[in-house]
Length: 265
Image 1: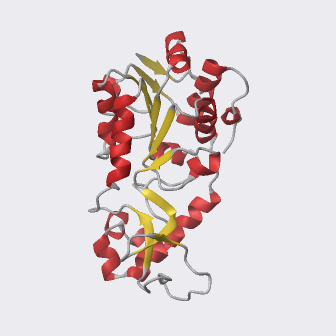
Image 2: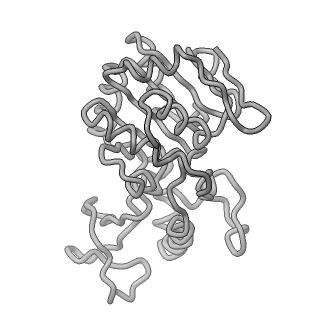
């Protein structure tokens, strides 16, 4: 069932969809870069600006690039961190945090985004498949650490072993955290409602999660302005921005004022 955005930016929600959310006992939500883009965080595929126009982000976000020039890679991530720090959670982040408060044991939020905006909106059960750009970890010991404020090195040094720190994100050519990935697939197989929001459906292994849910009999909802490889498999495909539809959907299902229902970012 395709539910298209109306001319005024609103979207008509079917009674069956609202009932499905209200009656769901176990919900998994997968979010992608489209959700972060609504907060003004540039997607990874968007052109860089200023100095960074000279660099291909796909060539900077690799272990090999870091080995060749750790200072360059660290400075690029420092620039990206500044962009994230200026961003704020948008209505979709807040609606999902509100949904978690209503279903504290029944919602698992899985994200491909690395900006931490779900945490800042108040979500507490978040599986960050690709890491978190605001964290750093030791490049040798692979443990999260805080960069010392008095460390003049670029990149900073690990306070434990002295090796360089690196962003705590998954680079091209690296595997996702095995335990977290297993938890995500287990949640997908056990849910009765799976919502895919703002993701292209192209990046593996996350792109396989909704199909795991489908094979287990879950209802599949996709929220995306454009068609994706997932669209034709969805029970409900909402052609809209997540920030437009998620607050309305949560409010329609549960009533009351949803924090994410306000306008603006």
